Length: 290
Image (cartoon, rainbow, N blue to C red; front, side, top):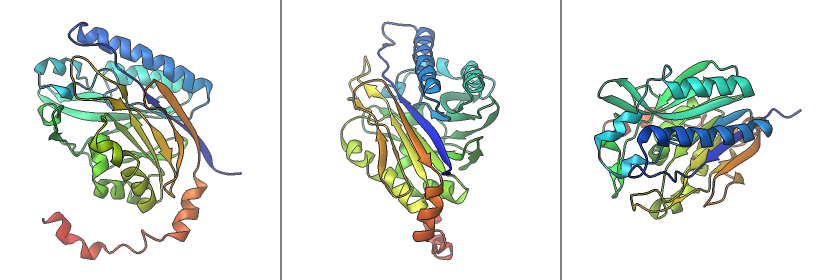
């Protein structure tokens, strides 16, 4: 019998403008939307589910205003992580839950909490690479660079790692996740049409090939008011250790992507391409000195 795990990705639009709706109401509405989609995932017997970056609101980094600090919460004590833990236990589904984390007042991270299928909090990943570029991606205003390394979490169904959005442009962390034992790496993102769309189906399949694991890549959909930074183009997908896309969503509507991932393929691919064996870390020291 193949060692198969059913995984899911949720991509969703945020149609609620902060100019028209209080931030707590936006959070409540977006969580309600995701609870419905999580219920759909449960009906489809998804075993590991990942939500999109900053899932309970718009991509607020399109502006630089302190009002968005209101969306921060502690992890795992905060209400969103606690609510998702209850749903994970109810549906027997491990979950990756991206939130805006407060460690202490004034120290904030772009974080993903990882919850096992029995509702246990396994730990968190904090986004390492923080962009501040291209009009509308002002993340250094909001986030401190991650300080927890590249952890891998052993869920009931598989060993998973997390990379968040802009992280995907950096192969070093993707390699670290593979060396740390990840079988599936999830990348919750928020990225708009333009230069990144060309890279969307290039970089992450390359990470999957170079490291011999599965990747689940998520992007939100739609245009978010009141900003004009472009269209979030969806197209969330799973790719296998050969770099083949095995399931993909549309570019323009809320959707659950489901794929059955045969973890035995990891061993098969790594027995063919001996990239871990043939590494030369003794020659790479200069990379961290530049």
